[in-house]
Image 1 (cartoon, one colour):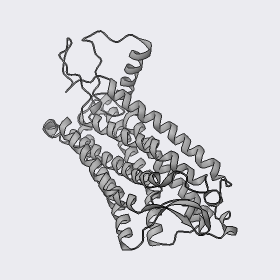
Image 2 (cartoon, one colour; image 1 turned 45 degrees about the horizontal axis):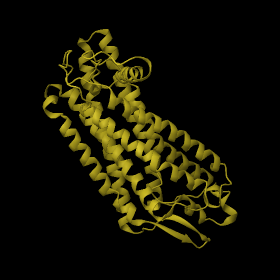
Image 3 (cartoon, one colour; image 1 turned 120 degrees about the horizontal axis):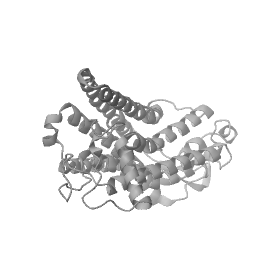
Image 4 (cartoon, one colour; image 1 turned 90 degrees about the vertical axis):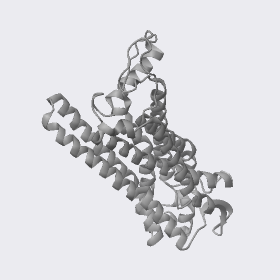
Length: 365
């Protein structure tokens, strides 16, 4: 994400003769470099895939009827609701990712294609502020989902008492509150300003120096990457050990299901690490070192932005589309809406989305 500010101004600090050599011609002096075409195409692809994926997750979770605890018979004996803890977290993750894609990505893509910021002071502040908010909401939600899965799998006997719809909603409220509060310094220091090298242009720039800025950046690194990564890794490691112990007394079918679950777990941790590592490397490099303004470093920034934005596309794939339960639910929703009439009353196909996985509904993750 463009948390340090407008890349245009960073590259504008180079002499005119060096801008094109540094790969910043398109970012600072107009849409003349290859990034003026490549970046919008990449961002456009991320935008379309992410919007479609997250929207589909929200539609399916909102429309499919689920049973509570797997019980409930025909004739209205089952309770129809979508409020399992995991469904609430998945829905919150999709809301955060979709909001970020709709509000932030289109504006940030123009930084590489336009010579100045053209969206005014409000969007200068709000765009960067909400980018940080949505980043933290997504990461905090991934942590909450990991803890939720850990309780459901490792402490399955107590999970009914610990996990509830009400507690999940409280958790979501806390996630948004913390994210909104932690992101306030970004809005405070993001300003619309001019620059001596381009007196007739305006740039969205972060005017903030000193120890307070470095403390904030390190805090974001800790709460927005290192600690979440540690918690997610610990939770899923314990889940994998727990499933490994159970494999000794499992049938081949169940063992195959658990192995698929383990693969999904590894994908979750790997995707989280890869998508956010370059962004935080650059943030620390800028604050505590001398970030070089070269063609290679410019390309690295583009890659870091694409990866962090792409995390909004990866999340629905990892947490929904790899789940056989979700695919069945998706088929049910669109079959009922477009292909077949609604099922008879009392004969509702129920899927336990709280047990999301790449396997059957009996898989406990």
